[in-house]
Amino acid sequence: MRRLIVEHKTRYHYSEPVQFGQHRLMLRPRDSHGLRLHEARLTLSPTGDVKYIYDVFGNSIALVDFHGSASELVIESVLELDSYETPDLEVLLDPVAANYPFVYSSDDRFDASQMLTPQYEDEGEVKAWLTRFVTPGEPVATLDLLKAINAAVKADFTYQARIEEGTQTPSQTLARASGTCRDFALFFIEAVRELGFAARFVTGYLYTPHLDLALDHGDDEIRGAGATHAWAEVYLPGAGWIDFDPTNALIGTDHLVRVAVVRDPRQASPIVGSFASDTPGVFLGMDVEVFVSTRRQGAAAPTVIEAPQVAPLQDALAPVAPVAPVAPEPLKLEQPAA
Image 1 (cartoon, rainbow, N blue to C red):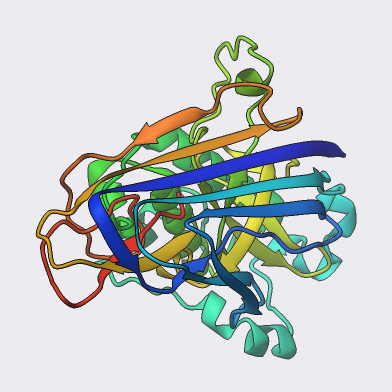
Image 2: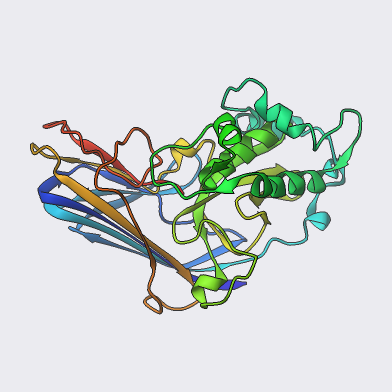
């Protein structure tokens, strides 16, 4: 078990006071046998009315209606929780699923149907990439197969942090041989779905000991630190939903703090909201601070990620806000899952 403190602060800056529409926050994890939430604090400036709901996946969502106008919006979430390692998967795995290919039960196939179906069209690039892992007519140990695919994503692709909006399609990630954690998570998900596995997208946080404890990470650098993180879960009979982080080739680890699970990355923005103004270019910028530590809040300075002053917004996965004037209609602000 690992006791963690997660500090996540987002600031939006404007040249003059603006009116805020309702914001949707996906920042609070749910208790499970792998995570015990002790405390969740949400601080808002300006203040607002908060109500909590669950989305279709059972994720905890805060709906915020802010009081009045302001030239700066600050949303700060602090979590204190215990994160537990995944037990031995070899022991948990149902013998029927020990080797690939296997067949899910009829109930599992029905209930996980949307997680089994690839969501992005390509021209066979992903299937071609998978041919080195699976030989028709030759069974392979299920966990060995998934571990190999997970490790190959890290080995084959170059990690490049990106603050622009959106997630690359799997074919784009293949063509560019690079991406962010959200790109790698989606690529892994679509790849294993092609093989018949049920998989889903996870957004949350990544604990990195060398940042927390000021250690030398040597050659084992953990990629994607200092921001929200994204990875995948695969459903395995007997073992349940198991974490696979292709960005770092991690499997079922207490380094990962799950906040929400969804079918597709477009459903996983930590912060979504809007503002309204009659002034063109009123939005000045945004900065995000994320720090995951084993110490109390304020023990060390967080990593700061600054968004550019001017950047377009077209979908739900970018830590930027729109700059094109659309007055008096509200403008939409969204922060990425990773």
